[in-house]
Length: 278
Length: 325
Image 1 (cartoon, rainbow over the protein chains, first blue to last red):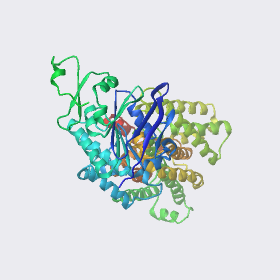
Image 2 (cartoon, chains in turn yellow, purple; image 1 turned 90 degrees about the vertical axis):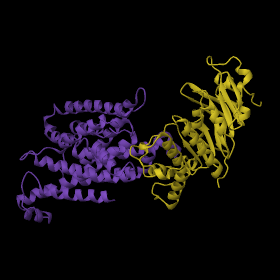
Image 3 (cartoon, chains in turn cyan, orange; image 1 turned 30 degrees about the vertical axis):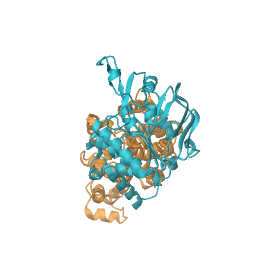
């Protein structure tokens, strides 16, 4: 089974040109669990994910994987432990599902090494885990959005990393495909022990599907921990600048955030909704 | 695999055609005796000229096509081609300047100069094409390349015009042709082509990762900038060396990789060898056609490829998925 790895950020500062996005951030990803990172647009959650996967060098501080700085780790070595699925990956025209998933084997191959039985096994198991076996010979450009996202996750799985970082894996998907992708990631976490870290913009889905919820605001971690403790009316106000009601989700038993806007509100809304345990 | 044999078969047929067909009709008996090494009769001597010409067309075609495929992979740009990106013209200008001002007629130094010129114009076009919003988009790169090419062509003309002594020498070379091939020159370019091809083929896996976008490639452990630079170096060497010997031949690097992608898909480990084979066939075919259609004169191969390539270029630009490489 997978070994557990400790991924943490220490006093991390990140930015582009003059703009500082993250400043003095401290964060520890719980090993073997599903972590969701939420925050307002442009709060730096994607930037944080890029830095944790070595794509962006920190201005100050460091990202540590098992005590070793990721930015000083060899690219291929890191890529065998930590995989990344960015927000808008590009599928070359005409590429088949099998070919795309096979490219996830890159960090396990040298310049001269040939495709091995182990590579075949990894691709087969990735296709199976993502229920894309029947799509294997199809061209990726013919697939629906949900199918395509499953194929990209399969590629990341073929990389066989113990940690998987995903940047908004549910964007542009219909709600049923959002749930499908998040169910799939939960399956992977439970069956393979893969540590999953994902940036999500849907607070309620994030709270339902993660073990550790991290809310980012002002370049720092505003709150981190069990979703029931983190997703509160105060947090939503502080992080998103939004008034809301947090109740108990009747389907999952976890917290459910209902936004309060200026319209379509019943006068007694506050009183009639069941209060969430706090 | 079957396609590989088909392409090899086509190339073999074209080799036969290239040796047998020309502006002068030569009987089979003379062809055979010439292949045996004899060059006593005029017919046999004609064949002796066609042999290195055929070899050069194969090498240059393969080099230009692979160079185009690698540039398309490195820039993720379906319009990339050493001709369109202004790289061949950069090599040309460097060679012409060397000829005109430094009396440089040694082919070996010409190749070095051509590769340097190719590299400089590649860097320049990429820098110009990356300016502004959205970075180096396919269209911006193609426009920067076309503009640079046009400017370089006028520089070449400006250098040659006042120099009657080298004009004749340069003119036929400048159109792009394989007619003046000798085995001596082929030997001189061979090491550069060999190293260039080796670098390109060894970059195949990196190109496969780069095709998925820079972030995915980096996530797969690819050193994106290093991989780009390395593959570009190989492609520049191929384009520069081919241009030094044959002059600027356009469109082979554009057309061939697209055709091959239709046949074998986007995996560069397959695509690059196929591209080499098909590029050799295309240039050889273009050369044979150029010898036939204007008898008793010849049309240089660079003009024939432009006739094939220009409509293809328009087709690619008009296709909807132009941004989706």
